[in-house]
Amino acid sequence: MDYQSLFTRNIYNGKGPHLQRGTSNRLGQPTRHNPPFYSPEEKLTISHPVREILFRHSEGCSSVLVDDDFFRAEDIDEGKIRVQDEGEHARLRLLIAPPRLERKDAHGRPTQYNPEAPNPFDDPTFHRFVDAFQFHKACLSTRELGQVSSISSPSGITSFYIENLSYREGWYKVSIAYDPALMSTSVYLHNFEMHESRTICDRLLSEPLHPLTLHPMLVPMLVFELIFEICIKELERLFISSIQIQHTLGLSNYKLFEHFKDIQLDNDAAAKSSFGDGQSLCALEEHFDFSIMMGKKLLSYFENLNKVTNAEQHKPAFENAGSIIYNRLDYLVSALELQLPRLRRTQAHTQLNRTGLESRTATLGNNINHQIALESKADSSAMKAIAVLTMIFLPGTFVASFFAMPLFDWDAETQSGVVKNRFWIYWVVTVPGTVAVLVVWRLWWVFYLLESA
Image 1 (cartoon, rainbow, N blue to C red):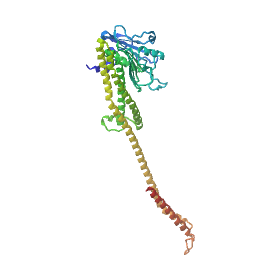
Image 2: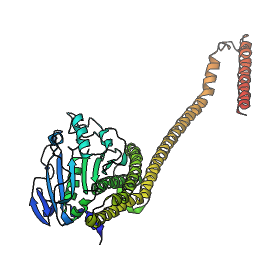
Image 3: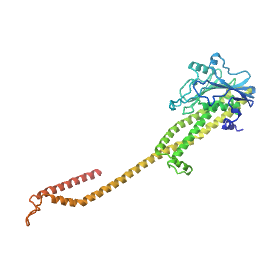
């Protein structure tokens, strides 16, 4: 049997009687009960109580009764919390904290990056809550550690704590306590968004997954599916963005993506987008690596769970559920690992885009400098033309200036001397001055050649 088909999207796409609000299944027959989670029209506030959904397995696991209610904090002090009811073979108790809300100011802008959901209990009550269900003590911490850990108590109860690294959306905290003697599991979901919590509920309420609620790793596997979807969707977005920038700016001639060239994108916008994609890819790579390590750590728990669970005639049902969940989780981990080459390709595309943009910017700068050089050449030609015109008029100007000097007596009588006796002064000043200018120019030219050498 292809057990992967149990987890396909068409099982919980919101269509069909097994996903109607206010229904559960007993031997395949829907029974009425309270809504499994907040309605879509309901306005979210931090004052929402903790939802409690119970999956009760009858003796022999022939039927599963699903019921839900609000968890009363008073039950902790009154000692009304019961791990198991008489006649039940196993129980899955799912406790869902209020959803994580994005805090915004009056202008609709986020006031906090990736905020944590509010704790529905005060500190003393929350400590009693953790002790009553024997959850892992790591859930008392509010730091973003990113961990997957397990601990067993002297009573035989195994507690798990799962917290993935915070990456924009998808910062989950899951606490699990499993009693192998009673095959009873308690799960506390914290820091999920509303649609994510509803997805988990819808998956668990789908009839094909009811037999799998025997196993404590079912909910972690469903949470891992959410992480898997976030990773794949973000990788697909970044991959398309890198390809779009590459072909919009003409950095590639691959004909399959020529339609991207119709998109208007200037160099500044492309540079900002490429730089932002590079940062997102760094965070996504970390998210991929941690998710793969997280999945492998969860896979390592299955063997020990089979050893500590001694349910006699019900052991085959438990092991069968564990095998199905294990195969699904192993498939998701392998699928993430197989996406690592595409992640590296996207990183390479983004780096090539940035290099191409830098090269294009340098080319544009060189073109501008070339244009300036051409304009300077045109200006130089104009100056040469002016110099030629000056040279044309220079002899006439010199002659006019020369004859304007009072060195000649143009009114002298015929046969008398025209040149005045002071004419020698002109040559005394002109000849040494000309020689001095030529000598200075020659000296400058010699020093220039020496410095150039």
